[in-house]
Length: 256
Image 1 (cartoon, rainbow, N blue to C red):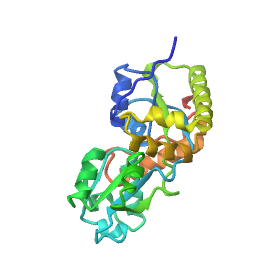
Image 2: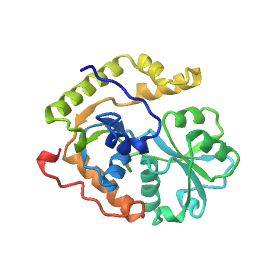
Image 3: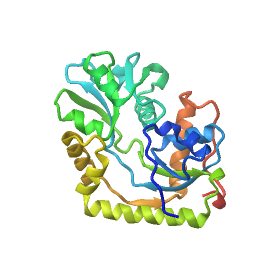
């Protein structure tokens, strides 16, 4: 059977879409599989990308009186809440003894977030690629904090037990991801054009920078990935974003 690519915007819906059988396997940030598991779905990890330390950051206006992450206490912050951006914000706040509840999170699309930051309706925007690269070009904003080594910020490829994918199928899928990663690294401009959904030149240029600078290595799910997912789940539970403490690692080998 020829594979079919299913495009959709909202990564937070991935677990529900898998449960409805809209597709068999997905690629998202690190947080959607954790939310899916928290909802009771039997998540199975297939693979993950290399870490992406520059693809997420907290932005502030250059005219802002915010000078450090500590200054965000009690302030409204725009982000796609429930994505890896929430985890990034949580870890940045933990570094200075604060929690997510010490800020006012505003769940907004990237376009809404940009408008809110320009209008000073929010103190900061936790942004991701390619919007991050696009808006920095304007010179209006500055980076308060990046992912760096604080969080891995990997893409994760996962499914749920209900979809019935065999271990061989998951291995074949991972092999195709590795092949695709090599093709992208060899022709980043082609990939940038495919990723520029709007067709706008500014978006293409932003994707071109992102694609050229990104490590496109993909590895099968291993214990290191599961430990990272466990750390993220524990962090989100500590901050009150998960009602139940999850166990992602350790797992039986058969659960990989």
